Amino acid sequence: MANVVAFGEILLRLSTPRHERLSQARQFDIIYGGSECNVAVSLAHFGHRTAYVSAIPANDVGQAAINFVRQFGVDTSHVLRQGRRLGTYFLEIGAGLRSSKVVYDRAGSAASELRPGMIDWQAIFRGQHWFHFSGITCALSEGAAATVAEGAEAAGKAGLTVSCDFNYRATLWTADRARQVMGPIMPYVDVAIGSGRDPVLQGLVGRDGNVPPDQRSPEAYRPFVESAVKILGFKKVALTVRDIHTTDRNTWLGLFYDGAGISQSRTYELDIVDRVGGGDGFTAGVIHGITSGFDRQRTVDFAVAAGALAHTVHGDFNLVTADEVEAVARAAGGDVRR
Image (cartoon, rainbow, N blue to C red):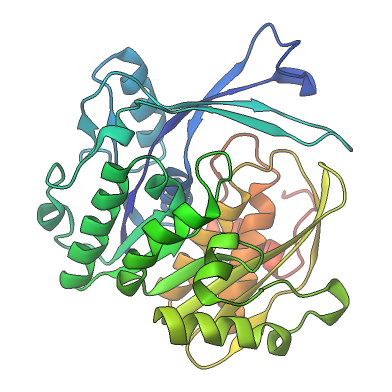
């Protein structure tokens, strides 16, 4: 098993109960999450040693977030206590034809006030194998983006594998700005994770990664993937493919390029309990497959099954084991386990 470091912002999530609209809600369900933290928790469930790096305010709300994360076996000893507030997001959980909606309240958060030099990356990376970040953290502020770049560069020098999930959020920044900020960080990235429809990845590659449903195959995605490898220098690329039928019903599959070829998973028809964190479940599955020495096909099969299961768990975290993922990947899931 691998030692993995994830860097990002932990958020207080306030979601509407009973599929209520934000305008009608009189109470919220409280939970904590955030893209990179979701990956760390998922990998801990798969048996890896994970550490999470972030910043929280030195108050009871910040401590509650850390208490919530470390109950799942994630090392939070590198989380800084500083700043005035914890980033928050409100989630209106949709249903049927009404989409879910996220409202961010992250300006001035502790994580957004991070700057290069605040984190002792050299000490954190001792004995570690992998460093993961996402585009969401780069979007928080210029200082946070510069800290991501500092961490990715230090990870490379320390011999760690570096992964990036592009995770574009249109409510946080524009695609043009995202490309300007993330482009210079890409030389440090070994494993790229995202979607063919992600405008940041498309813009950096200079090619459309969308493939019509009736034409999907490893060969159909090869031009996009090979362009990403050639232009941005990635060693491996993992892509998710999602078709949205309704808020509760999606089609889901994935592809994985390992440097030698591309493999595609089977397609899942998802009955969604909670979509938030589904992509992070896939990301954790990719990291697990690579670090466990899985071949290309087994890696993408595991990652897509992990992401599929993440859609069935309430909250941001994918609280399933590797054995449960393997059962779904083998098409053995769904029955009562006795």
